[in-house]
Amino acid sequence: METSCRKKNWRIVQLANGFYQTEYQSPEDEDTWIDVTRRETIKGAETAIDGSVEHYAKKVDFLKGPKVVKTFK
Image (cartoon, rainbow, N blue to C red):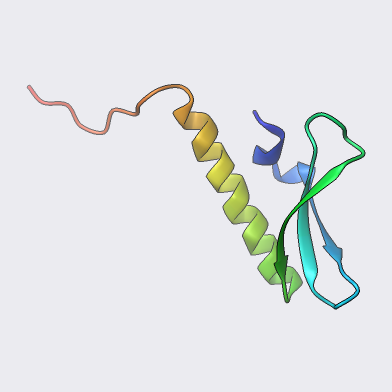
């Protein structure tokens, strides 16, 4: 599974302006963090991470090919 699809590869940091930034660990270099969003609260930042993890998981799932949602007989 892609690195950004696992919540354990994410973190929240507080910026000098008081906002919270979400970041995920680079798949190529585990010492590098890639910033994604900025939120006013930690709760908002964690909600953003949850949404991103879900989004990336769906993208990875679609790499397997189209998903059959209905068949007819």
